[in-house]
Length: 247
Image 1 (cartoon, rainbow, N blue to C red):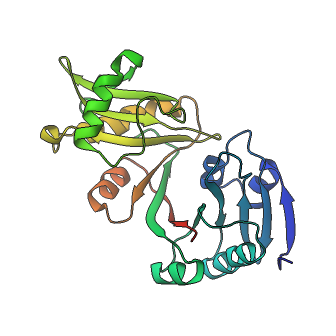
Image 2 (image 1 turned 120 degrees about the vertical axis):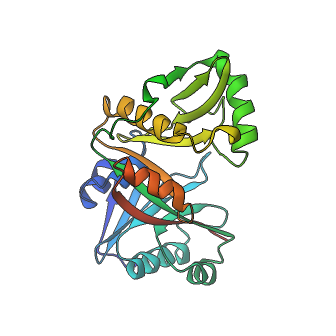
């Protein structure tokens, strides 16, 4: 038996238990039907396993969150090969406690206000299927490790900046739930340091704020230059996370 305060079911119940936190509003799609548990202020949720390797997540104090996840693992509610989003924790603790095969530390950042105007933001345009070859070429060269790719069904739309007939910057709208979400922000190697990243982020953020009351993005914790840029653009809401692949 899992030692919990109470068990919850459904997206609405999880949102209520987490005060409608922007991260949870993003993490849970509108049609998700999570199971959830609370303990000492922490809330953990799990999603159905079919066709889905994103097991779920937990918010709350680090120690309580780790203990709650450990209880779920011990109970067999979640198993090897799936990953959870936890509060930022010591990597050695996560590896030892969960036999984690991979741990990524990152920050979930959000804003509710339009960013300061940036030179070139008016050049940001929505891209279409005909632009996918240019997108693929840019990402392959400038951001080969990106998980956002043309033809990815989780991408709602692509945006970019052209220089003549060359695509020099691009980004994906991977909004889900009811929070806008920017991903895969990419600038051509030979065009970096010219403000294109700021222009792309500002232009996309303004577009998504027309549809959502929050816009968010994720950035690896060691990408200090990107963190400085996003904070300058108003992404000051912060939740520090560790993505954990269970072993």
